[in-house]
Amino acid sequence: MRRIGILTSGGDCQALNATMRGVAKSLYNMLDDVEIIGFEDGYKGLMYADYQIMKPADFSGILTQGGTILGTSRQPFKQMRVPDENGLDKVEAMKHTYKKLKLSCLVVLGGNGSQKTANMLSEEGLNVVSLPKTIDNDLWGTDMTFGFQSAVEVATIDCIHTTAASHGRVFIVEVMGHKVGWLTLYAGLAGGADIILLPEVPYDIQVVCDAITKRTKAGKRFSILAVAEGAISKEDAAMSKKELKEKKKNGVVYPSVAYEIGAKIQEVTGSEVRVTVPGHMQRGGEPCPYDRVLATRLGAAAAELIINEEYGYMAALKNNEITKVPLSEVAGKLKTVDPNCSMIKEAKRIGISFGDQ
Ligand code: F6P
Image (cartoon, rainbow, N blue to C red; front, side, top):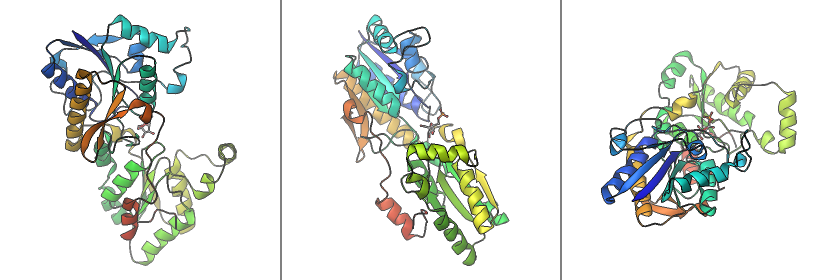
């Protein structure tokens, strides 16, 4: 009998359940004798042997269900080699659970940090197959992560247009994405933003204000900005980490970058500014059809890797084909937005400002 462990790790997103369903249905369908063990709350469940023996019925009816039926938690990679409060060696504990349960393989659904831990466990001798999860789409080795397209749908706040137009205001929508701008770029384009600010393209606040003033002079009553939570000014980008820390310590403290940018725009242009932060809503709700398809394909591909005993890989999407990438290549790399990519050039062509020139 094959016994497969599965866990969802890090921030949740849409299509975690859909992906697990893809893995499970394929395994049940293609193997005569298989048991799936679901670890609770990510790597924590593997460390402390909190698990449940799953049944085929557990994976039915969850294609459209958001969140994760297994629960998740953040277990930072940096802390993995640090013993817990009771002195437990976390890595050894995870290996112990894996061996005690006589697992054939561990399936990890996770983002960047989780992929690093998956690679570490693979290097420690466990059979690991992983799947690319995150609304940030910042995983190296795959064109698309599941969760991303669903988050784009939430972050594309179309309804901001009507209220912005009615009041003649400047609206800033702050979009998640951690240190990368994929979600902001897509949501900004889809939502008809006039200005898009990304971490990969440091902005000049004067350029941003000039773009707003230009719109006002052209008779436009409002402006909409899509700002990544990791957006950074040219000035700050040129500073060392230490200098930046010092600056933040001595300056005005804003709840987040959108509020800081909003205050400056109001000061320079005199426009009335409002900030909207959709926050964790971007990770919630049902997966969109694109994600359901991607999740199902990736899940089936992960099952095939398991059946063929090809371990140490992440199932990925490349040029619309499902493929596999070695975990050692994925771990520790970020897929960022290239400031010279055609998408940014096309956006600039239609007049969208990125605040850089
Ligand atoms: O990685 C997904 C993500 O939603 C990021 O976009 C965001 O910066 C972060 O997680 C928020 O983390 P938490 O849920 O721990 O607040």
